Length: 244
Image 1 (cartoon, rainbow, N blue to C red):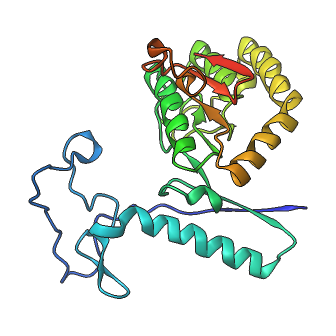
Image 2 (image 1 turned 180 degrees about the horizontal axis):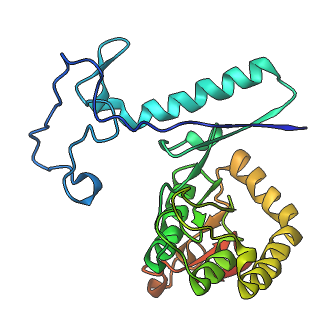
């Protein structure tokens, strides 16, 4: 079965194009700390007071909107060619969206901190029912370096969705630019290819038995309380341990 690809686009406009719409500032008990600095909720998004079909507020269905876009896109692609398996990559998802789309963890930074946080991010999305997930290895924004890229390629090879990707305004960070990164990438990407059939099995279980493809240690060692806070390691099912 061949595969057709589609990447859903992003919105870079702040708020609605309709001047009559006024941004909604929720006055709930808990303020939403958007972007970590209380950025307005319409930053690079529709105004949350905008209405969808049926009079439904954007504030109530923001994450669901991206998911329904993915569902509609997959339905359209299958209608156009039912013999091809769609591959749709989105970063706007909701629990369960993995039935329709893959997910990447958004525009990260070329930092060790971003690399570390990619692990709990990928683990969380597996628990959300979105198993085909990963981060941009070597970092998307800012300038990477030889050590960071080498370590990230070794880690990223075991993401369920593995890719290297960087911003067009950043310096090139292709693994072959450094001999050490090239050699490490060859070792770990070869390792990934050697267990692809195992990954396929895990994805089959994820789709038929609600399993995760990767999982935190406490899934396997639930009685060991010291594993509860470990977020720099993960298991591919229970066969292998990947450490940062």
